[in-house]
Amino acid sequence: MASHHGALAPGSPGLPGGPGGSAGPGAAEGVLHLPDGVRSPGLHVRGLRVQFSTRSEAGDAVLRSAVDGMDLDVAAGELVAILGANGCGKSTTLKSVIGLAPVTSGEVWVDGEQVLPHHRTSAAEQHEARRRVAMIFQQVNLVRRRTVLDNVCAGALGRLPLRRSLVASLFPHDLRAEAMLCLDRVGLADRALDRVGQLSGGQQQRVAVARALCQRASVLLADEPTSALDPAASTQVMELLATLAHDEGLAVVAVLHDPELAREHADRLVGMVAGRERLNGAPDAVTRDAVEHLYSAETATVTVTRTTVGTRISA
Amino acid sequence: MTATAPTRSPRSPRGGSPARAEGPSPKRLAHVVVPTAHRSGRQVTTWVTAGAVLLGLHVLAWQGTGFSISALVGGWEGMARFVGEAFPPDLDWSTVVAPGLQATLVTLWIGLLGTTLSIPLSLLLAVLAARGSTPGSVWYQGSRAILSFFRAVPDVVFALIFVTAVGLGPFAGVLALVVHNTGVMGKLWAEAMEEIDPGPADALRTNGAGRAQVVTHAVLPAVVPQFLGLLLYRFDVNVRSSLVLGLVGAGGIGFLINKSIKLFRFDEMLTYILMVLVLVWVVDRFSSWARARIAV
View 1 (spheres, helix red, strand yellow):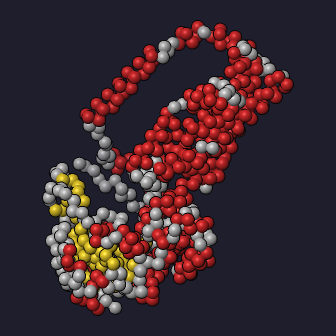
View 2 (cartoon, helix red, strand yellow):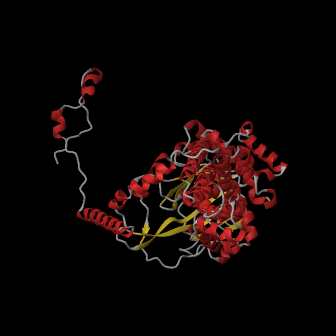
View 3 (cartoon, chains in turn yellow, purple):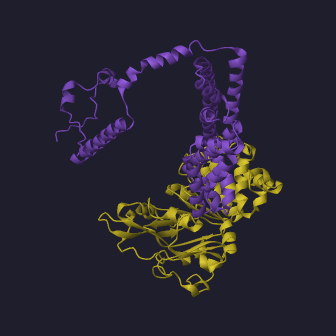
């Protein structure tokens, strides 16, 4: 499945460019080390950098890098698990791809369309490309007081005109029918009219997946989707994510805390340390020691670049 | 420095329930060093200063309001005459009780309309004045300013203004309450919207939903219980406010109370006050009963 990713040497993330410059304007057209890489279906991230200013213990202003030149490739039909210690930047990577965290520099491509930086594309293209990326969260983030069906329909808000979507009763019949198919896909069609708050944690997470399907996303980002779930529900959710990748051709990235769960379900493991990729390979090719090392004390410390806060490099 | 491990309990053979029931021996306890929090000098100074300032403010307030125990004691005769004339309450049906009940109902109607008619504008201003849903800082500041103005001007002042516009009577009272309540309820609702978990709204935003869609599909559904609770609370407050509005000519039982005081008919006044008591009690019970239902 992930054979062409062998071309991505684990040590290469710094390659696309120095700080801020990323790959430069001309690089998008095949100058990169992966000629057609970013143009192929799925999610492609190049030189992603997320920096924020903070104060050191001495009181100086310092720039801290949450993500420090991250490359990530997730092909359509592939389930990639990101592993790493708390604070290594794995959640921030996902959040910045979808616009929930400000990006300092870097490029993001979705199904061959450039999403970041903003100035390279029109607003309409942005909107369309973003609509193809869905995210599911550890906290599920459904509206608990609404029905399961309404929550799934809400995935389609981005493509509906306001007059058909301002309130749930305006949703067209076709959308409700599509939402029912999505619910059936996650095995919860019989709970359509229950309130989300009445469902178990695992069921709620599957509703969130159904909402992502109803969004017709081709890239699914999952930020610790199983951290609040018991082992049985975790397995169920991971199996669902794996089938969506393998059977429906979604590009799925899941940030996970449990290396064993990742080994069991993912096609490829990506390990992050201090905002950078540290390991990348199929579960069989990655040793347990290598995974352990991601969480060891010496590698898990967050790097602090001591520079005075200057102008923010705009994305 | 001599702290032994205080958490390790004495081990006794077989389950150890007798020893456990008695707890550690006094001898053991005597050796445990319990850490005590030390207040720094700065903390003590802060507390003493705060206490002194508060005391000073109370002295100023005492003087500023002409607070005098002796005046209160010396004036007991006046109060006794007032109370004496109020008893027994005048319970004449046709001249006191029937008009009183009718006016009580009017007071209730003023409170009801004053609350419900302020919903549309309150909702609009609340959405504009909540950080998660406002279209921009100009809208945010503007709507906050309007809400502050409506809230800062007392409802009695609005009543006086509307009495000059539409004449004496309950209609002026309704208008006054609508305006003032919009200010208060709009702010309470905006704050309720700012306190909710932003996760569901973020989730919809990331899948391409627009601002209005996020408000109607994520923000408003989450705050429905708070909104209804605050609405009932304001209804409770507004019914009581409409009494005061009656005193300035905006109709209802407050108007009758004011009239009977001016005519020195304290026995009539007492009857009206008893009616008010019942009204306030009923509204309060209803409001808290309904709020308890919604909270579930």
